[in-house]
Amino acid sequence: MTLLIGTVSDEHVFLTADCRCTIRDGRMVRRVDTFQKIFPVRDKSLAIVHHGENVFLQGQRAVSLKDFVIWVVRENAEVFEQPSIEKMIERFAAVVGPIAKHTLRYRGEKLIGFWLAGFVSTSAKPKIWERCWFKDGREEGQDGQNLFVGGDGREYLLPRDRDFLDSTYNVQGIPRMSVKSVGAYHDKLYEKAVQKAPKPRCFSRRNDQLVIERDGWRWVQNPEAAHANRPSP
Image (tube, rainbow, N blue to C red; front, side):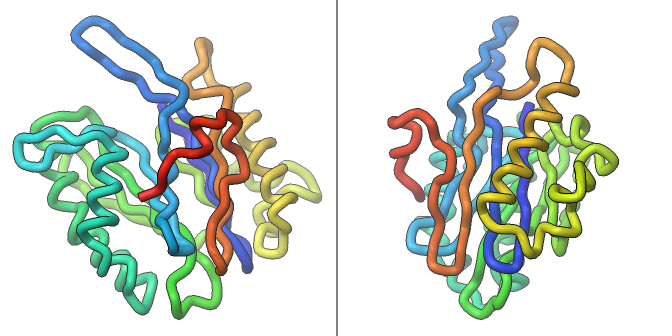
């Protein structure tokens, strides 16, 4: 199960992702809690965030999520040089969409979803945009919000549970919040989801956190040294 939280202020994007990956091999089920789902783009104020099926079919070849994201960034650099977020979204979907649909046709159970988050060269404010491709052929997307919750773990953070925690932490205040305040908001939301989810835990106790500002991105929370030093695409 995946839980993603994203907030968009006037000055930055803050991203949180759990690190749970469930691997099924026949009747065996193995859970890994060090799985990367946030991929900052090198030399850009952008990140790619993933939920859903995490193995992709490029032709007949199965490719891991990390290798797929590295390929998208390396071989499709023009996608991330667009003059507007709308154009970048259009180009990203044109590259990823056919592969997502092909993958879901032959493997996978539910969906493949991506967020693009951050700034483009002409944008005064940052943005998060989401596009999901479903097993049944549907496509859905969303943007323009201050608070995004994604992944199948979103059922444990319904609007009534997340949009107004108290007078300090509420969705109306996000545009003016500092990075520190937004980080505290994310921590409270994540803990609320952990408490509401059934046992055994559906997603990892620890998580990754990234902040994106106009002059670049930085990891906020990556407690394991090896994990923190992962190369970016």
